[in-house]
Amino acid sequence: MSGALLSAEGLDKTYGRTPALAGVRFSIRAGEVVAVMGPSGSGKSTLLHCLAGIVRPDAGTVRYDGRELTALSDSARSALRRQDFGFVFQFGQLVPELSCLENVALPLRLNGERRKAAEAKARGWLERLEVEDVAGHRPGEVSGGQGQRVAVARALVTAPRVVFADEPTGALDSLNGERVMTLLTDAARETSAAVVLVTHEARVAAYSDREVVVRDGRIRDLAGVA
Image 1: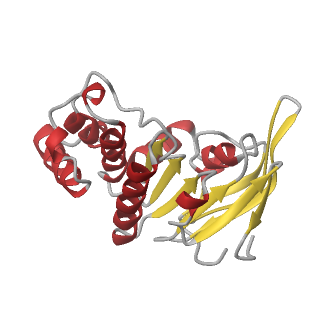
Image 2 (image 1 turned 45 degrees about the vertical axis):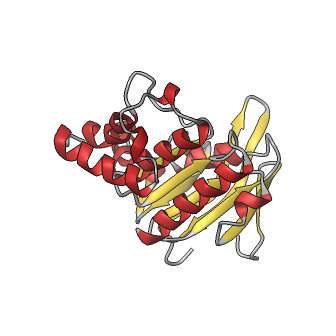
Image 3 (image 1 turned 60 degrees about the vertical axis):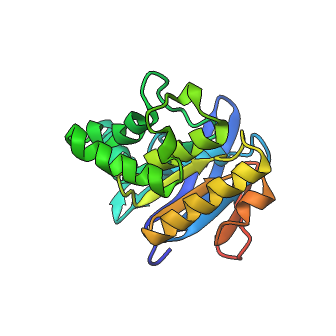
């Protein structure tokens, strides 16, 4: 795991009597896109949540930029998720009461940035993701593809070092899905952000640099490196 920005060693996580992760080892470097694949219930999302500090593993360690994530307080992990991590979910999870511009600016506002500066950065990312024309619309007024591009803009607006994308094209048709993946991976590589991409679709995994497969809570790196 030399040179890894984010890594995990010996991760175990059990829900009730069901093991979700069993001794998982994982690493990702800055600027790398790694696809985490596997069938439903295999442990993909649990791995992502552990890597992002959302869920504490029962055993094992997660290290980010030399720090042990699993040893940080809840508030410290929350701050890390606001400042260093970006998230894209299957259904976008935009705030319905806010405009698309306000949704993208929201992470910056939560970090204390002034509205004018935050919205200027947000507008720039909407332009980059080719949805500047929906800036004043609410999420319920835009298409699924547009909404997901807004969600990608929100994930990238804070210049995160790691982006966690959980089935980011799962609710889109193939054409919109391909456009979202192209925009997401191109922008992440330009900014040297690492992308942990959870998917069960081979066409989405094709945008990654490397693929790993989770099955029955265990992981196999298709490049031959655990």
